[in-house]
Length: 382
Ligand code: NAD
Image: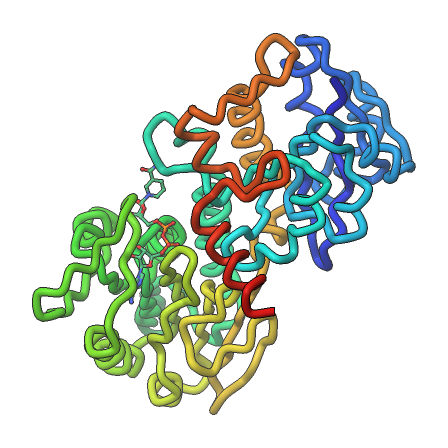
């Protein structure tokens, strides 16, 4: 069996799906590994390190695509690469199956088996494969570092002979994985932190990090969706959050916003008025930018200055920390591979809850019901 590691082609991508240190257990099972030249360079893994680890390195991307039985990737392959895949190969990665399932049509038709890291169920057994959490942890940390760098103020309170400097005030919206890491990072830098999440259960975690949790009375509406995620709210419930956010923005130096609802556009929580209420020099980092953004002014991937407030809308912050992002992702991939490769042979068990949950398509047909529905709707409307 051949496992291929490709150089990612998405603009700005620096991560790699497996590092040289990840290969030992795979090679020990008799799996051959071919790496595209330069695949790990940006993540600190040289071609020589892959060779030393026991892989073959080649510049021939087409031959890896045509021959690999197993292809762990970071991002979905583009249509050209999909058309070159070995039929019945298994492709694993952040495939964006709910955002852009049509972009996977060529691979589904090939047919290859598509396993999406975004869809790995968040059950305890699959925690070590939770790549979304790994990347959210990095994004939450890096968002605070980026904001601290841009802010024309210090984060910690300083008492000096020249006077006292008050601590920066950071407001974190959405206290999931990224939000909690942002809170922890901002607290370590000495900021005073407030946080808001629609899930009341997040309150305890926020407080345990030394931040203040802001509660909103949603009038009895349940904000809990399945699997620990938030549910999509009504406009009325969203408005209650928006009012709180506008009030809190006025005294915040930094806002890090992370609110998402899986498979839906990010909720628009931050009105223009909230941005305008912030002091000049303040910084807003919209981590929900890849899903459209939490701020109504957000343009994904574009940095704007609005009334002196810097609005960052990064679409791939983990790629700015390529070494550790690749290290965590590679471990998630390796743990996931352990489910589908037994003693060097492919053993895809679609009755396994984790594999069935992650499986987008198999043998030419969509497997995930949500993906099938979106594809069906796209076909019938075209
Ligand atoms: P996410 O990226 O989908 O959303 C980020 C946060 O935004 C969530 O906390 C969500 O409640 C919040 N949010 C959504 N709509 C909002 C709104 N209108 N206003 C305010 N906040 C809003 O979620 P995530 O960070 O990936 O994870 C969410 C939850 O799942 C967390 O409780 C996390 O601890 C849990 N989780 C469980 C496991 C596991 O059991 N294996 C793994 C990872 C995460």
